[in-house]
Image (cartoon, rainbow, N blue to C red; front, side):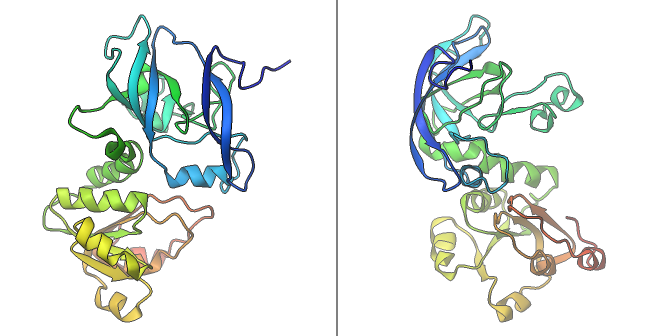
Length: 298
């Protein structure tokens, strides 16, 4: 007979779980495995709220296994380490992101690209190596293999730094990989949610001119006054969109709802680059003529 989540492991834990697709959270008692030889046990102090958590809590992607404890922007302090752990010690400030295991044998893993491993294990809503379900950071503690634990700089506030573990790397990685970092170039950031906020800050840190593209005019003050964007484009204003056509070198699209890509492609210069990192629940249509005609990269 299968054990309950509360008794399948020796370490007692409590978190916030969604039990059905209403996405309503309530307290949930479960358990974590004992600290293994390669493990780090972490007292969770903060956890960011990623839109993926909401998608999964509501089963909008159709893959949720209830009950689910989301959270993959986890920061806290080390309370215990296994015998083989040398990089971390009790009291260290650490973080855990989207995955907690991978095969460590495939080509992706060998290149340090574990997030592309076909056998990766996600921080929540996955099946762990022992056959039990993984639960995320909306909880009080977590046990993770040291390979998937990150050290936090002493001078970085844990609460402010937590979103870097998903939102931060999600926008930083493609910007670096696709060369969207040349100072003075024009970056459009579509959407000003969790990813968009960080994209604006990173874009400015790279020395880019940053324009936020949003359907919500009320976000203009936040985009410019608080986050440092250079301009704000209301995507529902046809006149303003027309005036901005062909002015941007790069666009990073962070919108998590279904939307049209055609207007964004029209904002790009020839040889412009559009990177989509939002994860809508339904596929987006790609207008091929706009790509070919503008020599665009998507």
